[in-house]
Image 1 (tube, rainbow, N blue to C red):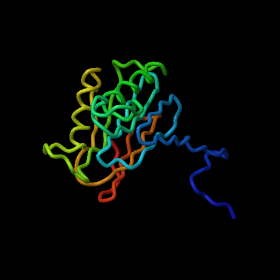
Image 2: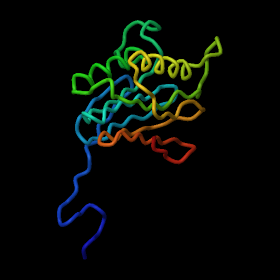
Image 3: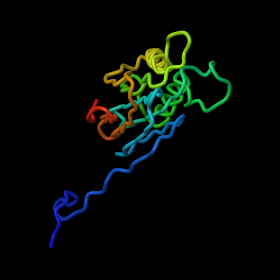
Image 4: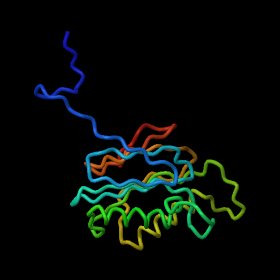
Length: 173
C-alpha cells in the first residue's frame, strides 16, 4: 500500500528544512532555508532578523536588558549587546543592514519581583526596541508582553516568525 503523506512530489522526496536550536543567551545566523527555533521565552525576548535580498536570517534569545546590569556572560545574554552581535553576524553573512527587518516575541511578566514597578520583560522589550532603532531596523511584527511563555520558529526562507504559546493558537508574524 502506498502512503501519501505530503513528502513526495513528482516521485522525488522533499527534504525537511534543517532545524537549528538557539538556546538561552545564544544566537544563530543562516543563509540556508533552515528553521531557527527557541523556546522558554518568558521575560526573555526572541529577536528575529531577516534580509530578503541576501536570504540571511538570524535569531537571538536575550535574557536581560543591558550588559551593564550584570558583569560577565555571553553578549547574546543581553538585549543591547545581543542585538548588536546578531546584526554584526548578519553583516558577515552578507546581509544589507539597510534592508533588514525585525520581528520580536516574548517579554512576559510571568514572575515580577521588581521593586521599581518595571518588570524584566518590559525592560527587555524597551531595550530591544532602542537597540534596533539605533540600527534603523524596523520592527514589522511583534508578540510582546502578557503573562505567558512562548516558543518561536523563524523560517529563514521566508522571514516568517511562528509564535506558539500555551494559552493561544500559533500565530505567524
